[in-house]
Structures are given as structure tokens and as C-alpha cells.
Image (tube, rainbow, N blue to C red; front, side, top):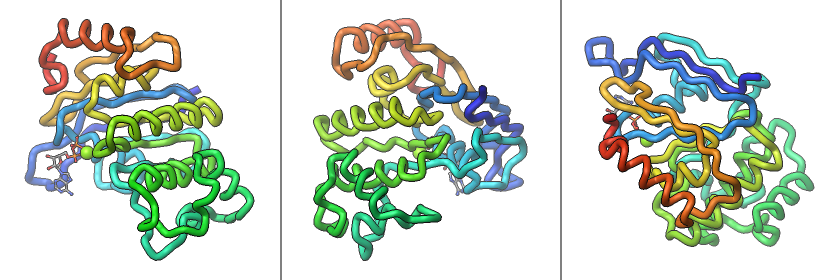
Length: 239
Ligand code: ADP
Ligand code: MG
């Protein structure tokens, strides 16, 4: 079964400007965890907005399993400062249920934080709230846009573990945007590399390493070195 598929003929921000994306075609199996890697400005965030339906100004088509809105996790936690943690999570729920919210907060390690405000939480705790919000409706598709940049290494690692365990529990189809190759190898079933101007797929790679994978462990490091040895310019969007 397909969890997510997108076919872009073309995406331009301005009819007179050069296309930013396409032609490009990408399909994810249901429950698959795919990492999308590309240089800054290559169109990764734009592609996620198109998949999420936030950007409809483009030619092509997209289909999402379950026909439910995708969960979204951004670079910044994007919490409403005037709402409590529980209210922030329930903001995305059509039928909020406090017991369900509290259970999800417990699941992400924030059982005491329901009544607190975002400003009273550390950066890592705010991300946990964002993770809880992304999973609260059990979306069949989850889109993540560099969710762990600007965190210190231990906090980022804890959040990767949390994300992986929630993914294993709920098995959404995941498209995870990153420009960190080690992170992609540690998280993904498959890696998709983008080139730019316009965005196009330059390489795909299945990662068959057993989970859980240690970000700085020998298996991930060996895979990373082999890949960059073969394609030194891969992260610049060139094969
Ligand atoms: P990435 O997420 O890979 O860093 P983006 O998707 O943010 O890249 O941007 C891709 C390209 O599209 C960049 O050249 C960027 O300047 C351009 N772009 C992004 N958003 C807009 C916009 N709203 N209007 C015009 N150009 C945009
Ligand atoms: Mg981006």
C-alpha cells in the first residue's frame, strides 16, 4: 500500500521566475520512514508544504493514505505562548479529550507539564510538546522539517529516540527532511537525495541497518563514510 505519493510537474513561486521544483516523483510505502536530504534552498520545505496542502499553487498531484490531514513537526516548536501545554495540543484536535492528551503527555515524558505555559519549559520540553501534538490525532502521514536542529546533541538524540519509538508504535508514513546525513542514516528506511534548481531526485538509498541505530555508532559512521567516499558532493546536491 502507498502511504504518500507526490508527482510534481512544476512548482514556481512566480510565473516569470525559474521553477523551484520538478519534474519530481516520490512515493512512500505505508509505514515507511523516508529521509529527504538536500542542500539549503533546494526546495525541501516547499515540497512539504505542497504535500501538506498548505501550498496549492503548483502543477501535479499528491495523494495521502487515510485522507486525513498529515501531522507536521517544524524546526521551531510553534507553540501558542498564551495557551497551556494541554491546550496547545488540543488546538489540533477536532474532538479534544483531556484523558487522551494527558496519556500522550505521559508518553512523551511530560506528565507534570499539562497546565504549564510554553515559556516555563526548556527548549527540549517544548519540542516534546510539539511531538505530542504531531502524534495526538494518530495521523497516517507525518511530515517533519528539520525538527531537531538548534538543539544540543543529547537533547536531539533523546528526541530522535522518542520519535522512533512513537513511529514504531503508531507506524505512520514519515517524510523526514534533514540536511544531516548521519541523522538520516540513523532514522530512515530509505534516503532520498535532492539536487537543486529545480529540485530533482539525484539518488535513493535503502538503509537496512538494524534498529535502534546509534547516531555516532560504527554502523552509521561506516555507511556515512562509504556514501561520501563514493559521492563527495552528495550533500551539495551533486552526484
Ligand atoms: P529548503 O527548505 O530546501 O532550504 P525552501 O523550500 O525553503 O528550501 O526554498 C526553496 C527555494 O524557493 C529557495 O530558493 C527559496 O528562496 C524559494 N522560496 C521559498 N519560499 C518562497 C516564497 N514564499 N516566495 C518566493 N520564493 C520562495
Ligand atoms: Mg527548509
